[in-house]
Length: 543
Figure 1 (cartoon, helix red, strand yellow):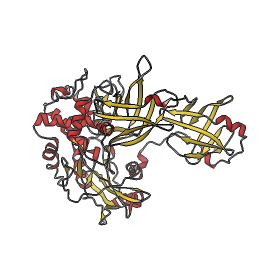
Figure 2: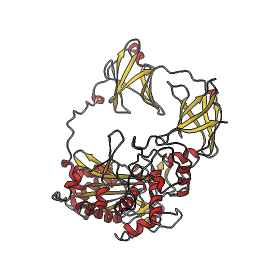
Figure 3: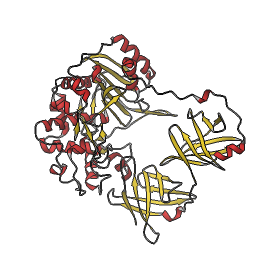
Figure 4: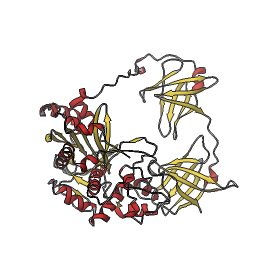
């Protein structure tokens, strides 16, 4: 089932919003982006009423040679590439060559069947259940600073043993799905997606600085370097990705403006190819899914917003369009510290009065209240462990009369009592409120989370030691103990610690995800299943 956003039907008939003067746009953007001087930065371009209203580069495209960023600097736009794949698919649908309801195995017989029908629509709307390749390949041993190729992705998909979920039952972002859409384009047209996009989008729109990269070693004129910083200064990132369909378009802010102008014109003219690209979806249970053909289409405080972000190897991008305001915002960055919320800041700086104001009462800033003296016997009742959510615990300890708080994986921070039950944490700029107090506080509230006190279980880590092999990933993890820690060794990923869940026996977390160890009827450990943010239950058997 598909749903057209009602707003889309109004686009062609709505009068243009009041034009914002160029000097006002420049002043607003300067105030947001002037912090990038002398550092990796951002190209900013604003399209208004079908024309470029503002373009400027902030910061440096290349730190080695002090080359400034401009509107013609080339960036890797990463996942913002998906909308071009979406256009290709929408075009083929319009031409009657494919249907969103087609089973993908009609075109891609090498993809495992899984006993489930996966449709082209499932790939479009991220509801396929296919594992996302970045996490899966990393778990198999790929390091983030090395090459990820098209062939790597295809091999991973073909070896997937089971789906993460029933197709259509939920939304779960999957780059792999868009790589398969690219494979379908090639199967149907006889041309690779990069060739099709060049012939049908880049050349007609004269996007002369744009290409979908198939060879990461290729020389690209005017391309920015990408950088991250730490206490030792700036460092270069290595962009060695060739996974077209989901990523890998290199382009400029100036070229993207041509695409967005054509996109808006297509919507205004009710071109079915473009109109289809802002169709939202419904899940099997009827819930709305706002991901469309390479974009998210949402209501942003009363205004329709068509947006996507991208990030890879410290390149970052945001392409955000407000059709009813006839404004598009393009931000392309080469900085690892880029703020993805910048597009939101630009929109509100330019037409903030158009957004519906939040009528909710703002919470009192308890940090301004006086700190009070609370008896240690009272504070002692709060020295417990509380579960905010899976994998996130907070532990309170009493040290030299001061209550300290520590969240999973974080440092320990001091607190300030504001009453007998309200404890302020300056580092979080937030408070914890304790309740259900007997000999211990059994509940604590943090923001809107009601967290229950838990009693940590004792974990015998020695039983999990051994070698574990995944046929799907073709890789082995060696699990071993080091003093009181359970560790994992992998030839390429090195050694890392596993943190036990304090409530569930056999559940651990490490830098590749969550591991759930399994036992047979005799209580012997037989293997574990690995899950992450976008992968679930990859089987490892104990050797």
